[in-house]
Length: 179
Image 1 (cartoon, rainbow, N blue to C red):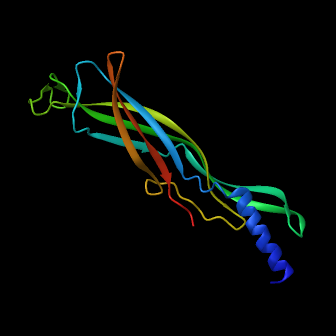
Image 2 (image 1 turned 180 degrees about the vertical axis):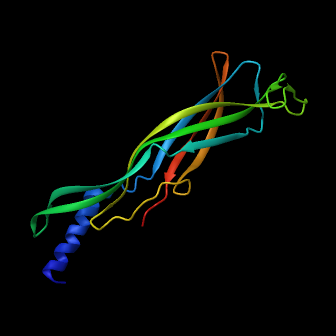
Image 3 (image 1 turned 45 degrees about the vertical axis):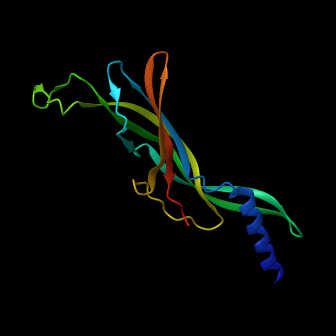
């Protein structure tokens, strides 16, 4: 291996260790708590829906310069490219509950007993400031969509506090990995 090849290998190892050890940071946790009003019931089989908006989320490509010490070479200045996602994800979770008395505006008449479902919801704004990729090379374009930013690991917990019932939802937004 020539001296220049060895130098390049050392620089790549150091840059990976310096910047990219914790990357990609492709998950963002969320938590949202739904208050169940008195007189309404959560079914044993919990039904819910989650909607989210990516309109306040942006992709940026930043350059980061760092001087490092490389064995047998001395100080070397590296130019690292960072692919970041920053902004907020708006989150809305609705939860099906049951009530004895329901009036429907759709057809302006009481519903049948079979149609005793309503929905309560919570909303949350999840802040994002994540580096998805760090490289000494040119970065690819990254498109934000429901396919590249998706929900995983959703869990819920029903609990009571001070005579009130709540359902706590938690999970993660995941960003599709970049190769």
